[in-house]
Image 1 (cartoon, rainbow, N blue to C red):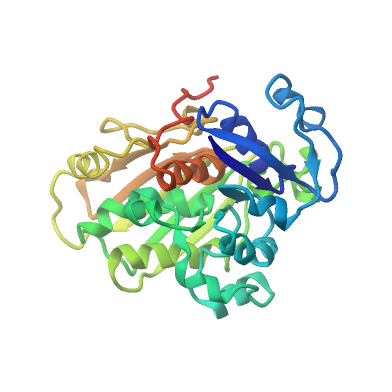
Image 2: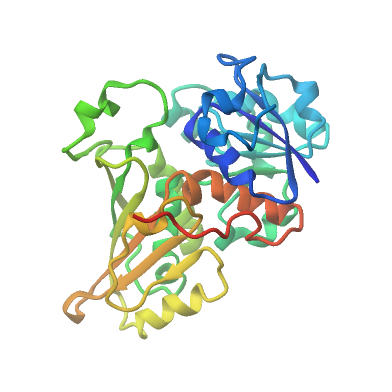
Length: 344
């Protein structure tokens, strides 16, 4: 069994790790930390986990305890993994970070977007960006994984086939994205209150969002050069889900776009290219580690529209983290992640 610890187990991504790992046959959760809830039983805080973690209790983060694990997930705000990751790596523990701490390669850019100095710049060179559809082989040998953000996952998977084929103008990319309220985290914030978020939709971060440099970095890696991206996120009155509508301008007459997407993702267990003419819904991926895609070419013109939906807490966070864990430990990639979505 793979001995696992979770740092920051009380947030939405932490409890989603617990839910998914409860069905994983090769993982044993040995420690879960929370400074604010130390001593509280996991099943008392999250009754949905009764019968699965009846003896597991939140504890204070302890480097010695965590260093005895085979792998540690960080389901924490940015800046937390900086302080512990290096020590854990020295002990031979593999680190899977769900925060933004190791996603950006440029230290100055990270500091600009997160308003603090980077706490572990010496680790950036070995951090592997954990999008398996792009970096599967590198992930297998990695010690430190930076799990992609939710918006970046949906956007990069949608644009990937088009940029790899050189079909669209990479200087004019537009990502119009919507997220459920859990994307803002579990902390008490006025914009996330029911009376504030329900029956309303709004854009935010239109002049600059923290996920913008991450998306731009990933798309530039695919393209092999810098890209021009307009990224506008929106808050929608639903609990979970990401819907990304992606626009590109053709710069060459393409082959059949449906065939292009189907061929690129034919062997990807967690990307579902839907039939031509489809409009994927966020509810179709609720609770699962799948990205559903549809590609359109309105009026057979020069604009390509890609629709990309994921569950922000699963393929956009905890499920993708487990997908990385499976790859790192030589397990079947889908292990613990092959349940169907919850509908309605």
